[in-house]
Image 1 (cartoon, helix red, strand yellow):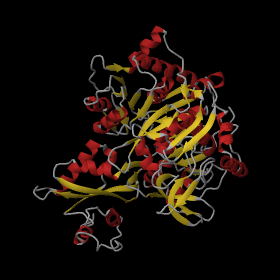
Image 2 (image 1 turned 45 degrees about the vertical axis):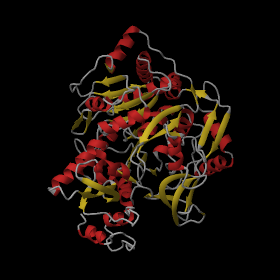
Image 3 (image 1 turned 90 degrees about the vertical axis):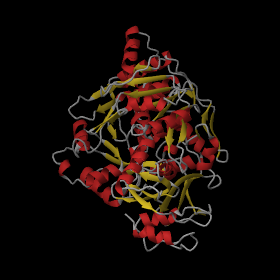
Image 4 (image 1 turned 120 degrees about the vertical axis):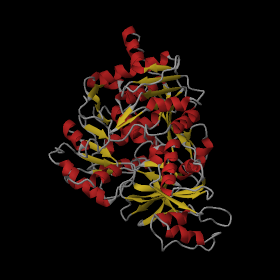
Amino acid sequence: MSYPFQIRSLEEYSSAYRRSIDDPEEFWTEIASFFLWKSPPQKVLNWNFKDPMVNWFDGGVLNITENCIDRHLADKADQPAIIWEPNDPTEKSRTITYQELHEEVCTMATVFRNHGIKKGDRVCIYMGMVPELAFAVLACARIGAIHSVIFGGFSAQSIADRIQDAGATAVITCDGAYRGAKDIPLKSLVDEAVEDCKTIKKVFTLIRTKVPVSMIKNRDYFLEQEMLEVKRSGTINYEAEPMQAEDPLFILYTSGSTGKPKGVVHSCAGYMIYTTYTFVNVFQYLPGDIHFCTADIGWVTGHSYIVYAPLCAGATSLMFEGIPTWPDAGRFWDIVDKYQVNILYTAPTAIRSLMQLGLGPLENKDLSSLKVLGTVGEPINEEAWHWYDKNIGKEKCPIVDTWWQTETGGILISNLAGITPSKPSYATLPMPGVQPVLVDDQGKLIEENNVNGNLCIRFPWPSILRTTYGDHERCRLNYFSAYPDLYFTGDGAFRDENGFYRITGRVDDVLNISGHRIGTAEVENAINMHAGVVESAVVGYPHDIKGQGIYAFVVYNEEHSINEDATKANIAATVAKVIGPIAKPDKIQLVNGLPKTRSGKIMRRILRKIAEGELHHIGDTTTLLDPGIVEEIKKNKI
């Protein structure tokens, strides 16, 4: 398969970018013609950022799985679509060809159809990183059910919150999952979660760890058994549900500045076209390349760059169940060597943690197959960039530093591997069709370069979120109300003299922990549920490995006689129980009070300075109700 839209030179990038701005409808119509449609689009774009309302490719009818699978059966039936590397390196890996993927996805889709799941139903997926997770995502898309994948590290309460918000009717899970040395009891967490979820009618369980599980009659079904029965009966339904371009494809929950996670909704056609376009161009993918994205499919990176875009491009996508440091810190490099990986796409957090373990794990590992390196999830610092470049890429592999979000669906700002310039710690230039701008706090456009500002986008790209599920007003308030007629990313950025963008971090109350967004309000709500906690305030601080850590200032009820270490451990355990281990604070400081204005507003700006160690640059505290509390907090800083 060749890609007629692949950019192969800096001149071609400049031309494509110019065309995409001058005539976006003509530009994206041309890209859309590469894909398989049941009926072609009638209108390319209809939009405004006030409501907000964005429609791409209206009137077009398609099914994304026919683009991911069926179209490749003529010439790629025996090509690996997914290579799966298990958590335990002594366990046998699996290679799933496009023909086998077609059979498995259609079989699973038939199981779901037989159990009454239909177009528009919401299905939550809570599984480990096994091939059946990819099959489940695609099977839902095949029948038009809206999938919502939940990261396997979330708690039962977090699962229940997402099920209830989506009104899901089914859950697909595993008995358990392996992650490094840990066995995670997924099914038991699902059982706990669905106790209060009245909408759930079916729970499908894949056997992975062979841990005993509870199975309730007429609700619980073993997934392999159901699939085997369909195969034996010869009743596999190979039909793909016709989907309108703007029909929802999936919901993915992300933290916001309030305590309640919000369900970002992506639609079928725009998401498919934009993610595939960016995959081919950013990574300069060539037929036959092995693409290894180390993300979890529970996050948007896994949706876009493990499953949908690589498969739409007819690529071979490598899927890894484990973690980079188990059974030793050479695991990534073993995988690159074993499969002769060409493209490695991972997180700065992983790079920094492997950096700290030295070069020993790289010994006798053949990394010569690598052609492109990528980073995702957070800005990469210069030290990590140079280590990655020198020791992994041998100073021969371009590094693409990609910036994007759950809400954007695909990469918005990035250099194109070996095509456009790179600069350590800079995402650099926007993708064709993307129009970034910087504005000041009053919303005034900043035209000059060598400036910092709030990063916004002034024109829709095809994979922009369409809404937040069940609450369109929340979508408007979160992304389109801060600055008129602009999509506000929530990030700050610096633009240098060449127009290259460097992301400087969140400017709202959202933390970026190892590339995972966690709302401060969400963590505070969990802390405040702990008995004895009066109130709390959570801020981020620089963390050598994670990029940003969670620092919690907690007011504890003085009536309780406490062991401070035990109390902190219990607070952390409460957060893990309510949200999941990923949200546990790195530092907890018990305080007698929080810095507040006379109107009662907590001054997180001051707490952020203290957490960052800026003890002598706190700023004016005279407006506080009790300025003395700041000195006390500073004195006892962890």
